Image (cartoon, rainbow, N blue to C red; front, side):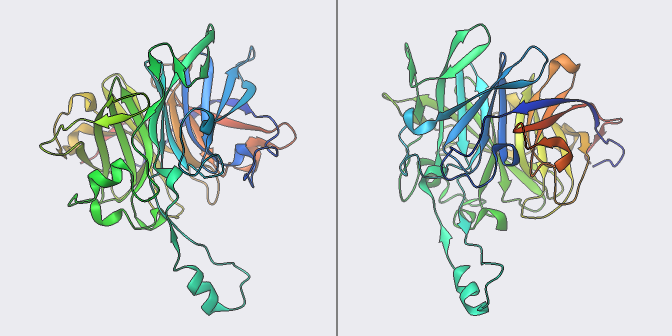
Length: 369
C-alpha cells in the first residue's frame, strides 16, 4: 500500500442523537459506539454493536443529521435471544427498498477484571468463550417511504416482507454451510478479536449479498463471502447453491494482513474499508476492488485489481474507522467515514453529537502489487 495516499478531510457532518440513557443494556453513549452506517434518501441508518436495534437520523436543513428515531429490531424480526440479546450489528446496506443487516457471527472471550487481585481467578475467567445467538443475524427489512426521502423500517410493505437466514441457539444456517470449509471452518469457534470468524461489512445488489470478514485473515488475505439469497416462505431467506455444492463463493484479497471493516459498491467496484484484524492500534485504508460485481467464481483476486484509494489519518486509542458510505454531494469519490471510539474533539456530550468525516480521494492512488 502506498504511503502517499493520505485522505483529505473536506467536510464534517454532525450526527445528533437523542438521549441514549433510556436504551437498555447500553453503557456508553451511542455516539461513542457506532459500528455501521448506510444512507437512503435523506436518512442515515446507523447501528451500535451493543444493541438489537438500528438508529435513524434525518437530514436537516443545515446539512447535519438529527431527528433521531430508535427502532428495536425484535419488533420486526424473530431474535432467539429477544430484545435483550446483543446483535453486534457490524454491517448495514440500504438497497432496492430493503435494509440489509448482518451481525458479526462471532464468538467472544470473557475479559478479566483489571483490578482482580487473584491472577488464577482472572485466568479462569478467560477460559469462557460465549456464543450469543442474536449475533448470527443476516437478513433484510422493508423500508417504507413515509414522505419524500424519509424511510421507516417495517415488518412488511405489501408483497415485501422481512426475511432472514435461519437462526438457532446452537448453530445458524451460515455456520452450518461453513462448518466444513477448508479455509474458514476451523475459525468459527475462535473469538473474533483473536483472528476468529468475524463479519464486519455487507453489500447487496438484488438477491446477491457480499459479506466482508474482519477475520480470519489468511496469509495476509482478507475474505469476502458472496451469497445469492432468495425468499422462502413468510420470513425465511435461503441460500442458492452457486459454487458446486456450496451456497457461497469465496474471494480472497491481498490486504497486507488487514481485515475488512466495511464495504460499499461504487458502480461495479467494491470499496473496502480495511484495518487491524485484532484488538490492535494500526492504520486503516480504503481499497477499491475493480469490477467486483462480475466475479462469479471463487478464487484469489489478482493484485492489479485492488487499488489503494486512501489512507485514513491514524490516532492512537481514538477514531477507529468503522463504516463508509458514498457522499456524492461532496464530489466524485467522496466518502463519509464514521468512527468507533471517536476523539473528544469530534464529540459534543451536551448535545449527544458526533461529527463524521467526509473524505476526498487520496493525493495518489497506487496498485497493490
